[in-house]
Image 1 (tube, one colour):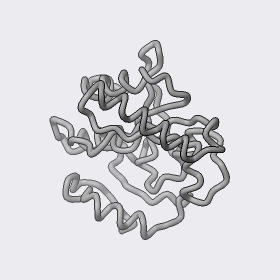
Image 2 (cartoon, rainbow, N blue to C red):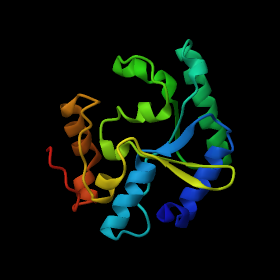
Image 3 (cartoon, helix red, strand yellow):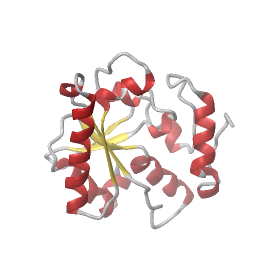
Length: 180
């Protein structure tokens, strides 16, 4: 967590996300993962992100997918008006539909079905400025530079396609991806 706290850009993004007062939120995926991989490779400055994944869990949108998508777009617009950062906001309470699952009960459960275990890590910033990691699989493999398919996601081919398409081994050649 000291790596996140020492990263002024990431702390600013966390404060911007917190300003929305969303329920059960975190910044996830590359926001945490890329920072760890950059540190493991000795890269400074950090690799630029394609987007900042702000996820939250608001079950009030279970019944209305379209209203939920509109709300996500409004949150993205608010954040992008405040800064030039590329935001992607998604209510994880409706993501179960994408995967054909029963509704998720928490942000942790939603993260637990992401394609790679090491991507399923988020961080949130409390009102007291305390950082809290959300990592349903822990962070040991992330900190070891491994990338593993999440069997709860199920589609191993999607995992392989993502690894190739994202060019992770080109950017971070020391990564260990045993399932390729």
